[in-house]
Image 1 (spheres, rainbow, N blue to C red):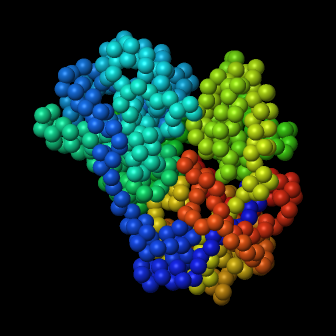
Image 2: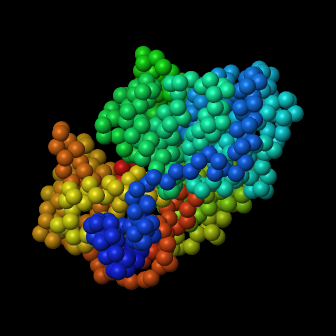
Image 3: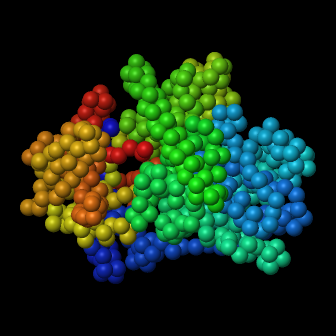
Length: 617
């Protein structure tokens, strides 16, 4: 990890006190709410309640899509749902297949192969689907950029309905077809994932069908809220507005799901339904469902969700678990190889790395780890014959899609958003693309943006670090993009009694603050801590409820630490918290100087990581 600067947004005392009194919350929770932009009681209460909901009719133009689908259901003929190979693509496909099947439609599906088809709808697939009898094609988690492919489908006699949530093309062109898309259709929550969009479409179909289609009584669209929660967390969309309500309701549905496949997935992941939360979804369930699309084909993931046979569900879940183990092994190998290339290349503002035997399904994860570890934008390219397929990840303040648009002359095709993107290029253009990308990053990022930030939500004292606060902070859940886990700053803390755990991969220790001793852990830090025992430190922690063998206790998880220093003061622009997810921008904040000059930090970042965090499995 790159050494970071602490950043604290302002927290005016009158606004904090007003929230404490109006909502009956603690000083710490009031600080968090004010710093995240919820400094009025009504707005704060609405955020904590997380019950925002909007009807399908809130999508402008959804009536045209619903009419086209229901007309095809009544007339007969094959409807094909074309999804994607990640969790969101699999789940959105399942939602629509289940809804259409309940309405009596003749429905099948197509999930592209990551290696042979690539992302999204392509012309060869359109021709194959038309030849096998598809009369209506519904896209799920793709299609908004497929202008030519949709036009081809129509010339072949295939109607198309596009449901998607990705960014449209840079030239503004849209497919000539009914579209259900949260931002294109001005939906009140523009951050819906594709599965949430599919859920709204299913709701609209259910409401529009009435009794004329005699829908199966056992099915209800809300039965698939478990899939909506799974996909919303996995796709790292902004957890604000209606997304918070969908995930809260969906996690409850997932814990009690009747789907044999999801229960089998929880079993192989050793996820206890009684303690299911967004972290379990992100670190245990989603990686296994994603892995099969990365390493093989995503069809097994869809079969897992759709099957009603518990025995078959167990078999497929075991297959997904094996694919996940293979994915982790492959990822580790590529990560080591990429780090060796970094050592040779030396210091740059942005990196393009490539490998002959890199798996194209895994390089996106490795790019994400490298961007987090080195605080630079990364593009990794898997080379095969004369073609390279790449995946990139960004850092706050750097628009990755804009960078690829600027380098488009070196690429065959590309797409994505500001935080993550994919591309294809000819092997012969790799070196010049790498130089162009690095030059764009050098121009777009100033030195200040190359220093990682450690956000502070609340400044607390030792006596506050107990079970009451740990449980209260859970009212801010679900946590994720645009609503990250709470970071508590403890000033003048001292570390003591460190002990290795997890075969030396993690360290358990004690935090001494204001006469209070609190148990803490640093994940992934080995046996080291960033500050010596007994030295006063400014340290940030996540405060959680740790459950072990039936015993619950509060526990601090170290995020960042540095020797204590005087606080500097700067007044930032006021606003809600912004996180580096697809629809956000960097946070304006108060900054505490880093422990060393930026140049020295860069030189030492590989030898002396100072922050500890878990890695997504």
